[in-house]
Image (cartoon, rainbow, N blue to C red; front, top):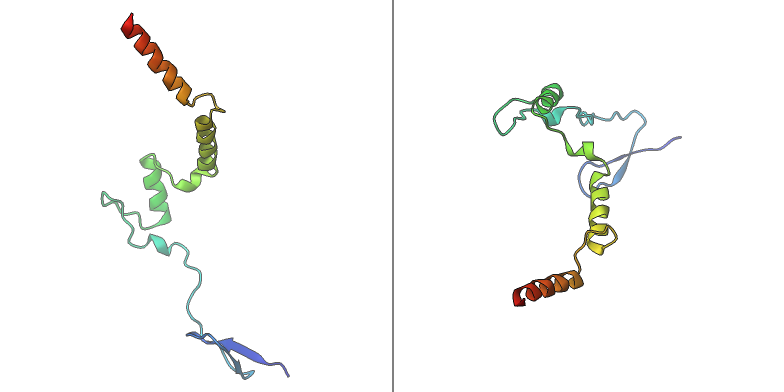
Length: 110
């Protein structure tokens, strides 16, 4: 004989044994699909309550979502790190500033 268990819906979420003829009551749908678009509007009041409307609005206004920039931010962070450590050739060091001050003071005194 097979034993069947179901988990309680409320804490402490224990498992209880049920009979073979026990039928589970559906909790509702787990697939939400485009539900997050319901009632969605832009800051200027345009209705974008469906995926199609949202996509069209973004296309019309030349906008995009952040997922279009996969890995772009990590690559930019690497470039900034290279720049500020001097590997990229663009970082300004203390010595550079000291030389610039010295040159300006030399011109002033001449």
